Each structure stands twice: as C-alpha cells, then as structure tokens.
Length: 566
Image (cartoon, rainbow, N blue to C red):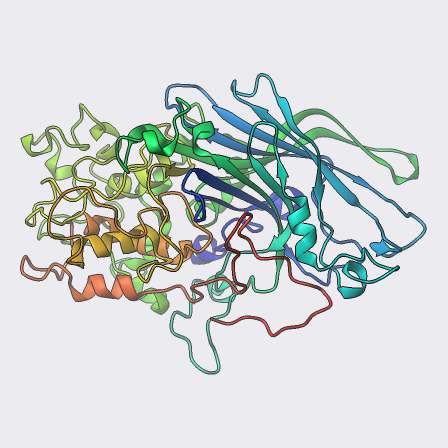
C-alpha cells in the first residue's frame, strides 16, 4: 500500500497509468498568484509535458497539435460550470523538411504557433483573442539559437522569449513555450516508499529530481477586473479578504475520441474532444487518489458533484496512516517528525477512522460557526469516522472561509471555537478540486525578509508568534497570506506544505494543538517538529524571473552544469 501512496509525488508528472503514456497531454503543474510586480493582475501558469530532457533531440518535445489545452476559471459558486475558459490549440510547420536538424539556415522544423480563444458563457461560444501566437523553439544550443547563417541569429535565447509574449485583444498577456520546470521534489526519496531525505548527509543529500528538466508552459497575466465576478479592480475590494474576489482555477488537456491510421503511416483524429488530464490542487491525484481511481479522476471535471465520489480519500487520507504510530508510522522513519493529533486539548482524536470533532455535533458551542449544521456542519462533520473532513476536505474542495473555527489561535484563549485572527478567506463552495485564490490579498514581495516557501503555514506561524501580528484579533496583512493553499506561487514548497497539512498543522493553527501542548506552551515540541520538517529540496534549481512570465528560461541541451542539489 505504501508505494501507491507516496510513489508519485511529482506534482502531476506521470501521475496516472493512462496519461503516463501521453506526455503531450499531461498537466504537470498549475500555479495562480498575485503578480509580484503588478498588484492589479493575477498570473496563471499551466505546465505540460513532464521530464523534457534538454538534450532530447532530434525530436524535441512540443505542444501537441491534436490536443486542446484549457485553463478554467470559476468566480461564481452558483453557475454550473466555467465562468471563464481560455482554450489553446497549436499548429506546427516544417520549414525545411530536407534536414534532420531542428534548426538550420535560419529555419525551424516544427515551428509552432497557437490560437488562444476565450469564453465567458460556460464554453458555449468562444472568441479568438490571439490568432497566431509564437512559440519559441527549444533551447537546443548556441549554434542553433545565436549562430550566424546556420542558426536563428538571435541575440540570446531570452530575446526569443520576450518577443513571444503576446497581448490579447481582451487585455491579457500570454506566453506559450518551453521553460525550466519550476517544481522541485526529491523524487528518488518519494519513489523509495516515502524515503524522503529532509536532512541528508554528505554522501546522500536531498536531490531535486526535476533539476535541469524542462516543461512547456501556458502563462497568462490577467487584470483582476477581468477575473472578478463583477468586473471590479483591486482598489474596489472591501478588505484584503473580500469574499467577492475569490476565484477557482483548474487546467485540463483533451483529445479527440477517434484515432485513424492511414496508408503511409499518416494519422488522423476525429470526433468530440474528451478530457484526458486535469489539475487543480497539486498532488491530489498523486498522493490522495488511489491507483485504481487515478484515470477516472483525470477524466471528470470538478463540477456537478463529480468530485464528491473522491471525498472519502480526503476525510481519511492514506498518507495519514504513516504519521500514526498505531498504524504504520514506524515504517517510514523519514516522516517521524509528522504525527497527527490523537488527544488534542485532551479530547480530540484526528487519526484515521476516529471521531475528530464529531463529539461536538449538536452542541450549542457550534452555533454560528462553520461546524453548525445550519452552516456547513453536514459537510465538515458528516459522521464519527471522518476526522479530516474538518480541515483537509475544505482545503481541497471548497477553500477556507473566514469564520470560526478557521481563524488563527491568536486571541482564542485555548478555545478553538472562539473568535481568532483572520488570515485566509478563499472560500468558493463548488465542492470540486481547484486552486482557490483570493485576489484581494496583496503579494508578499519576494525580497521581504519574512517571505517563505511555506506559504500560509508560515503566515499562520507569524500570526501566532510574531509580536507585529499576534497582539490582537484584527485583520492585518501578514506576509505569505498570498501563499499556498491560497493560490500557489512558483516558490511555494507544496510537497512540504501538504505533508505538514496531512499531519494536522492546520488544526494546530486554529487552536487544536498537538498532544504535547499545554495552555501555557501551545507551541510545543511536536508542533516545532512539524514546522521544521522539509521534504528535501526547498527551492527551484534555477532563479526565477522578476517579470512575466516569471519562469526561468529552459535549460540548454548543449550545456552541462552539475545537477542542482538542495
């Protein structure tokens, strides 16, 4: 059972049996964040095609001409499907079919362009907003890119990236092309039955298994007023947690149903498009959905209650079994720092199959809180054996509302059902897996000394422990409130954050502290163990850019720098 649970921790790289055989349609990662250099825009990045070796000639990876790539946006809970859809289709031309080189004499083979269409009526109609966008070639080497006569004679590869940034007729900036894969994770440790190397040593250091691999990205920089449900800009928000500024984002890839092989080896496609891959929250299909359901997960949308069939895997996540010594906790020593509350506040057990907070069901103490049956209690406290419906399920399926008990423990006086300090509201109750982002939250400057790849986990730590934020229960901007799982920044260490979340760190943040805590010392050793745990690599192997598309340029096949180790 353990290899199934942990053997695919590569965000969405080859995460399901069928899509592993179709890399051109494989969503690898999805990001949605407040643009760090523009408070009035949101950047959405959908990456595809895993493990692109920069040396992978002569047939380099590229967007599939027979794949429909889409980015889906939800800004109204009451509508049945997408509120905004961006659709991308790609075409390739061989400029010189007489050569086996990808680039020769200033011409490209598989020179790729794209059409971007936009729908604002649930996909009923689409309008072309970019008719012929340019995809830069793969970063093959200096002779191909900068070479005189024989190559493209570009000043450098970055100039090709800059020239490929298009402005849509509706105001978005768009870039499509190869980039460095920004995800980072210790794949070797994950694949070895969860044998992460959070500390490592001189002979067996944690290794970023995606270092020096490329992906193909679709990146959009979108003005907030084009995404906000009423067309408002950031300056019109009532607060930094205005509930009207929440969006949900997911991405997909679809193929036509019928594939026909003709004489001479030609291939044709026909029939309606069928979704073959999707991605919202990172690691859902990898570390939550069991192997037998992974292909089904990829085939359905998060609308119409489709995702409710997967809810049991969030209420009792398999990973939690390896953070519980009464189950299989001793089998994975590298996760020993992560242990789930079995006796929080001396009363509440959140281990798999245990009651969690269900013992409070019907209590007047829940009146007016999110746990009240008249509010969301039937979802969050469904029965006496679904303990993580109270924290993991909303993180993935609804977002988290700024209501009791989902406020920081600051000011609660050891009563998790008291009013605390607000630090998140990305609630969009569509009951489906998406990245949810509150667009009113300011971006944390990347040079802020309190910026952290631990996202909302670190925002919670600051809100509880930092004198600048823990003196009252007023709403304040706390650094990293714009971090995962409130959207997802390129810098966010989602592997570590999600492992910490499975171990109950969100419960601790709202006042359901770990078993060794006391009223006098709620920040206990067990909490410190969780907060200092890492899954290995904590940053990307290449520096990110300060401006759109923010991603690092793709690795060059001709160059051989040592693989990054962090």
